[in-house]
Length: 150
Image (cartoon, rainbow, N blue to C red; front, side):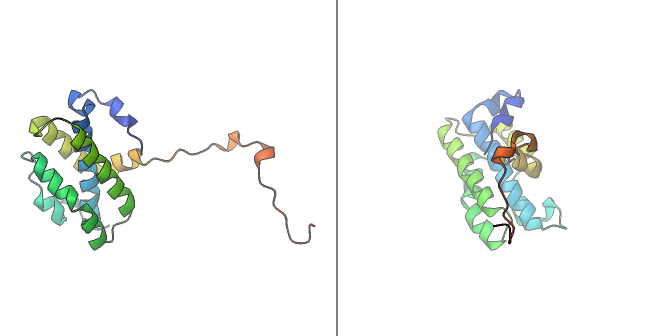
């Protein structure tokens, strides 16, 4: 998982561990909602979306929803369930490390932005680094032995 994208944000709330945890929770829960909605559905039709109290979320609300992620990923047979669960675990850990008790306006805003942009930020976090073809020398290339070449 890569979290260096937080450096691009100027918001001081997202510089705190609680802020990062809330943002990651929004991404994880947004991915669950997208999975519930299905490929043809929109996020606002997901049961999880309807349970969200946007703008008035409390830390305990997020914790309650995060605690259900393993159950929901299995019930809906979500793609990338393992990745969603590991992000959920990381967000919970960050929230536990933070010393803020409630979300307030900043936390609710960060959560909403992350939830609604879940797919974008999910792939930023789990972006795999590709090796360029130019870095592999001829000596490092595997030798293929064809039948009859012995």
